[in-house]
Length: 154
Image 1 (cartoon, rainbow, N blue to C red):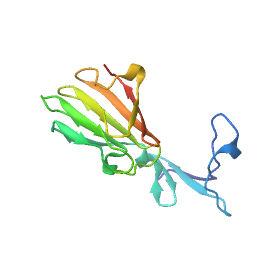
Image 2 (spheres, rainbow, N blue to C red):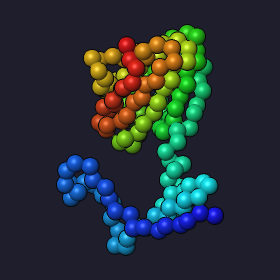
Image 3 (tube, rainbow, N blue to C red):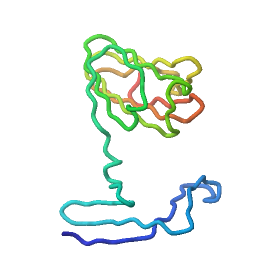
C-alpha cells in the first residue's frame, strides 16, 4: 500500500486571466486523491485520471476510413499496403467535442487526409499526406469544422 494524499483541486491557467476561462464550478470544493506506491493512481471521484492519459491502440487494415466519435482519444495504426483515404467529417454528421484528439501511425502505404464538405484542415503549408512509412500524425478538433493536422506530413 502507498501513501495517500488528498488535496483541493484548483484550476490551472496557462497564460491569461483565470476569469476568462470557461470553468465549471460548484458550491463545494473538489478534491483529488493521489496514491503513490508500487502503482500510482490519481482519482477524481471514481475516475482514475491516469487512465485518461493512455490512448487506446486500434489496428486498421482498410483503405478508407471516416472518423467517428468512437475514434476520439485513439491511436490508429494503418497497415494497408494500398493507399489510405481518411475522411474528416463535418460536425453536422459527427458531433466531436472541442479538443477531440486522434493519432495515426502509417505502418503501410500513404494516408491522405480528406476534409468533408465545410471542413477545414489546418496544417503546415496545407500538407495533407502522411510523411512516409513509420510516421506519426494527429488531428485535434477546434470546433466549427476546423481541425489541426500535425506531425510528419508531406
